[in-house]
Structure formats: structure tokens, C-alpha cells
Image (cartoon, rainbow, N blue to C red; front, side, top):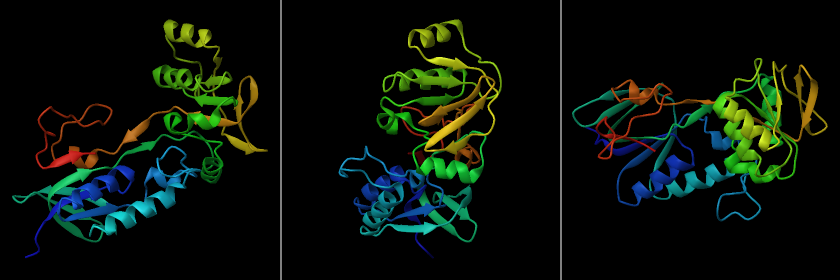
Length: 267
């Protein structure tokens, strides 16, 4: 009978691979399952990862981290985990083509960004050229003193526009579907920060001459970079399917003692 793993890490991004490296160095048997959809792979060049002056492309960073994990006998395998099964020993993780028996599971499945309305090929090209960005904490520095558009409204759009205002004076918050849905206090703060408000709807985004063009009722607006602030989908369905408590937006409930689905832990 095959001995169960000590831990199966589901999710091959920087968080999951870092966890795998640490766990393997405790002389534990570790495997990482990679479904091939890490958000880090979409980063054209990350400039805020310590140890890489001049930055490093996301795919190269993941490759180096996988090699480091494998140097400690971590097995990284391409597979999509479809469901988890509780057993007396721990869990069985069922993939499309095989299954893993493991005492514990570490979920590092991350989130999926809600994309703006635009052609998929244009989206991917804009992302690689830095014209479309999703993480102002990661790369807000790169839009310093540039013209920036934020797509969204309500608290999510408001907070992202205010945050980006620390990098540039030229920030426009555009509602995607119609009129802005903002409180009086949010509008007051946006006016004080000199953030321009534009109601939607927005036509599909397009690129032209190293700029993003956003069609609005006021006409077509040009930006050096656009940040969609449209929320995201949290990949927690594997945990909730086996009884983990989750919030309405998909976050997993966590207690001071342990994750309340014994034997699994969110990264």
C-alpha cells in the first residue's frame, strides 16, 4: 500500500511553492499539484520580488521556485484537482487523471480576477505590455505620474482609485455599467483627491499607440494604464465542498485554533 503524503499543496504559485519548500525541509513528503493557471505566470516582469534587481518575469520566477522545491524532493505535477474526499488517514485528492492520498492539504488556489469587457487576445497583449494591470499594491509604482483609469464603482472602485492617487495626480474612476454607485462620503473624498468621475457604460477596451482606450458617454478616453476594480472569484470550492465554512464572498472561515475542516489549511 502506498504511504500517504504528509501534505499535498494545491496551487503552484509563489505562496504554494514557498510553503512546499519549507515543509520539505522539515523532512516531510510533499507534492504540489499545478493546474497551469497561476496568476503569477501572467506577470510580464515583477519588480518587487526581493533578490532580482531589474525584475523577473513571472514565468521565470515560478520556474526557479519549482526547481528549488524539486531540489528538496518535492514532486510538482500538472493536474487539475476536481474534488477532495475525507478518509480515516486524511484526504484523497481526485484529479482528472489520477488521485493522491495525503494526511493534510494546503490550499493555495488563489483568486480569479473579474475581467473587463474586451477581446481575450487584446486583454493578454495589454497585460504583457503593462497597459492593463490588476494589482496596484504590486505595480502601482510603475504608473507614477502617468494617466491612470480605474474601472469600477462602489467601495471597491473607490478604494482602488484613492490608493492609486498616491502614485499619480491623474486618476479617473469609470463606472462600467452606468451611473456610479457611490456614497456621499466616497464622492466627497474622491473630489478632495481630484479623482475624475465618469459614468458608464464602457464599450470594449482597445489598445492604440501604447495606450488603453476606453469608450464612454463622454467620448473615448486614453490612459497609460487601466486597473479593473471589478472584484474577483475566490477559489475555495474544494474546501467548502468537504464542509469548510465559507463567507458569502467565498473566503474561508478561520479560527484562532485551526482551520475548521480538520487536516486542511488555507495558504
